[in-house]
Image (cartoon, rainbow over all chains, first blue to last red; front, top):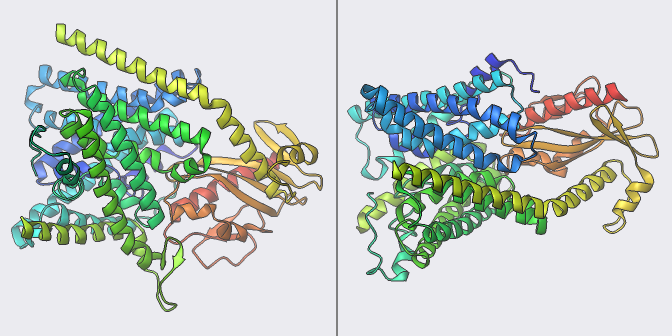
Length: 196
Length: 207
Length: 188
């Protein structure tokens, strides 16, 4: 089993190994949802919840069910089904028991099913042989890192739209890419602070 | 760009295929498939391999999804697409590993990237689930070609300026210092931003 | 309720079909893939122990010249000149890195190193598999540990250059090699 300290894993996955700015995963919603600050926060919160929950469900399924049965080939399939089922279940729970959360949180849930990072987190936890506690630290940290990136992006774009006159061809995905590039460069400054 | 319901009876097959190459281009119009466009375009051979892999998987997964489009219940269609795509890609990977190991070794890192590539899901949702198999295959092929074109365009700048080579052959003069930034993530972001700027400005001019 | 039942039946049917397809392809291709992997492993062991062979007689040469020992949970391959080789496997940045490393009979210096599988960023981390990069490992001190330095700064005999633009992949390789070598030398 991997012997890295869970706290180190948690901090590393937010800063030095940020999944959006270092691994460049989860880009599609990153570009589309970061239009305004409020939806970015809603999406970020939803992602944190779903990613941590699905990782916590997938860990026992992999190690206690698939490995003893030598069925690792099914891991992709099982993970996808668990993710879709979890999201579906969460949608129903929010609709029934927490209606006020529906508009700030609930509408993003269907988008999360196809967000690559949910699947990526489950796959990486298997690859790196994380224990359950390490998985919780890793998944929470990764999702917080992604949420941080998208919230930063939304804030920058909102400010930019107030003060800047962006050329028409650059509006939308174009300027998002350039801002993301600058953010990725900035996050590279964290490299070396934490050794995974 | 809003995806309109495709009226398949009126569209000729050529139009369907070429739509994915410019008008409905996956990256420029629908902003899909960005993750891999940034990660693996630092070398030309990777870009070509990824483009070929995505086109192949896109064509077949669109075909299968279109075949079953009337059987899939609406609420679980995303799940159905993901399962179909994942099953197909993994089966192909195992098949290659067994019968063509050199190709599998070359494509190894991309398998995971192809499965989670939003283009496959996006085309399944926007086109394959609504059209017959023949048109879906054409659309998938067109999108795949358009996508590969962009990958190659990115690699055309990144490899020479970042490594000094094209397809492994050194082409830059001796005094050239490699722009390492173009080989890593931030450089990819900047380059794609510039490309988007140029191409979207051109598209608006021709609209 | 009827639609919910329909959805459930569809999901079960789809899951079973896909699962059956995957398990089916897996079992059908398993023997061929295992054979490829075995050949790849054995030719890599022969390579790092510097034992010559050809495509056709690789397995026979392996059987004749290499002693396989199962120590703890590690397989150690010993050549006739007492050089030892063993597999290392661990997480890289994107996927697992695995390879074979051989130590000279002094069990301190590296004879050779070969990467079997890696899924690092092509062109950057992927260069850990290139023979140009790996040849700097020859005759370096692996005990007590290898140290990966910034590119171009390797001076001492236990120092290795990292790859420019591939810090994390290089660090992963460093950690992997040091842990495996420490375990293997402990078992010898």
